[in-house]
Length: 385
Image 1 (cartoon, rainbow, N blue to C red):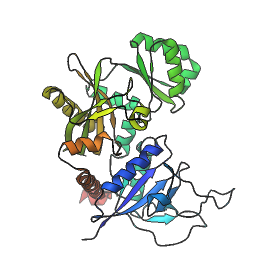
Image 2 (cartoon, helix red, strand yellow):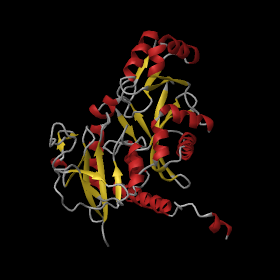
Image 3 (cartoon, rainbow, N blue to C red):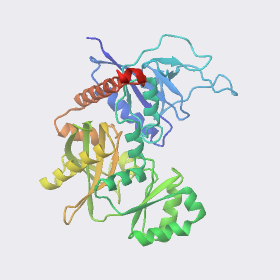
Image 4 (cartoon, rainbow, N blue to C red):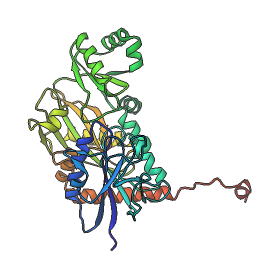
């Protein structure tokens, strides 16, 4: 059988660039090369796409190395820079006037192993839709909604999914009336609170505030990463429980549940990726009723945002009464060797290579379903007949 040609896309302009590189390495090691031909496409921090046969040709340490420009006054680039040709069913094209014109592979499907802005926020998914290429993961609307914590919380609140009390604010509001935001936080929330950039992942930009001074500092810090923030009441004495979802929204499956035991006060970027102090337990030792509630709410959250393909859903579970509260949903979770998403499915009987097979199958199914949709409006005469 002809191999499926997979484009493994990684890097990007997000603060999570380095995490994306680690995820892509892990995916490449696990993928069945007997079934798939793989093209590595690294996106550097300036946004240029580069095609190569191995990681060493693309990377400078843990990041995708930029290529020298042809002309300092021109935006064209040299070397292996490529673009995804729109309306050309996955064909790559050389980028720049000085790029070598050589045959480039047509991709059957793309695995966008990108995290954060310009990767899992719907922007890149829109490019794939315009290009007519199948891709793994949620579509434009679900990706954008899940990435924007403020918007996602509104969707989940309308669906009756339990969440921590919270407010949101914009950079403009903070600039014009900072005292009002502090007062609103104090009026609606109890100390301590978490302050988070609305559109970011990997716990980047998040900090915990216990008083007014701490809140002001936390807001200034979060606004370095996004123009909108969420201020959320901290739920104390809770366990961090996660669940993986796989499938289409109408028939998705939920994995066994896992637990994050942070090596710090909360599971921040450092404890996730830079030290070995945190512990990931899969499956988690929780009462059966709690596990079932987590799985039920995971599928509900996935359906409410119109998810497709995959997501990891994070919860806080109270130690005293087992109450389950949704924290957030992540539509392109990490695939690093220590990431919870593949570990949860491995604990559920789906090893990493089979997980990748299933994700690719789901992407192709979704694309075929979209391809059957009518794109032309029939004439009035045709309707009358």
